[in-house]
Image (cartoon, rainbow, N blue to C red; front, side, top):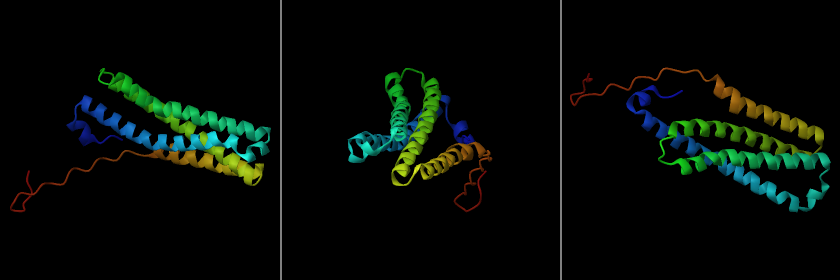
Length: 172
C-alpha cells in the first residue's frame, strides 16, 4: 500500500519517477537470477549427462529454457521501454506496462525454476521424487510470491513523532 504521507508530499510526476525507479531497482534482482539460470541452462546440452535424458526430460529441459528466455524478455522490457521513451511524458503508462511485464516475468521465472528443479531431481532420483519436489516448490512460489502479497491488509501510517523545541516541550 502506498505511503500516504509520501503521496501528499510529492507531485504526480515525482510519484511516477519514484515508482519507476523503485520498479527498475527491483527488476535488477530478478534479472540477475534469470541470467544465472539462463547461463546454466545454455551449458546443459554440452555436458556428457545430457545424452542420458529421456524424451520427457528433454521436453522439460526445453520448456525450462523457453520459460527462462521469456522471463528474460519480460523482465528486461521495462528497461528497454524506459530508455526508448525517456523524457517523452509517458511515465504513468510506462509504469503500468512495466509493472505488468514484471509480474509476468517473475511468474515465468518461477515456472523455469520449478522445471529445472524437476529435471535435476529426476536425474538424481526418479520421476516421482522430481514431481513431488517440483510440486512443493511450485506451491511455495504460489504461496510466497502470490498469496502472501495478496493477503496484505492496509494499515494506517502512524503520524510522524512530534518535534521538540529547544526547551524540550513539543511543538505544534
